[in-house]
Image (cartoon, rainbow, N blue to C red; front, top):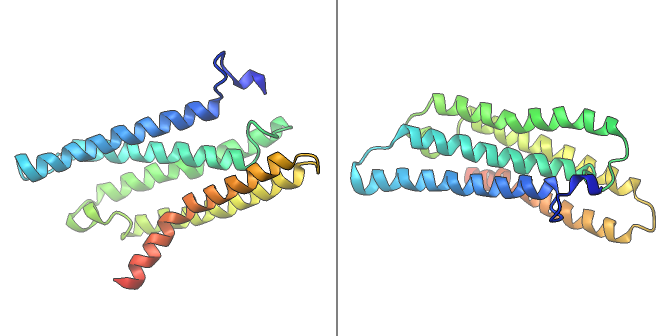
Length: 185
């Protein structure tokens, strides 16, 4: 799809991923400054820096989830009907941006425990459950995309298999870590 590329050959997927990475880096800078202020300067956290970190990190995570889900369904590869885009865009946006809303709800009940144990709260468990649901949607999208390919598209099948490994790893990493912590704590 050449209409999705700029003159340098970059696609929207690359732009979204690049923006997501930069927003994630900037959010970590806010978090680092907050920790420096706490540890070395004043001994207290700046709530504005903490809120900026949370919102920017959530936006970064949403963008990555958005790209992962859409590529799983063949975005920029095999979308062949406009109807596909109309169905999956609202679903992806809803599920991705639910992280921001739940994260902000979790932040509104901020106390000494949830400040450093974000996923060990009710809202955190909901975010982990959403990731597991997104994993099933992702698996369905990968399977659907592979089934739509012809037997001549060997390279695309290899890509989707490699992408499936990446996507499953990304989506399961947080639930896996939480399960390990719950078992051994």
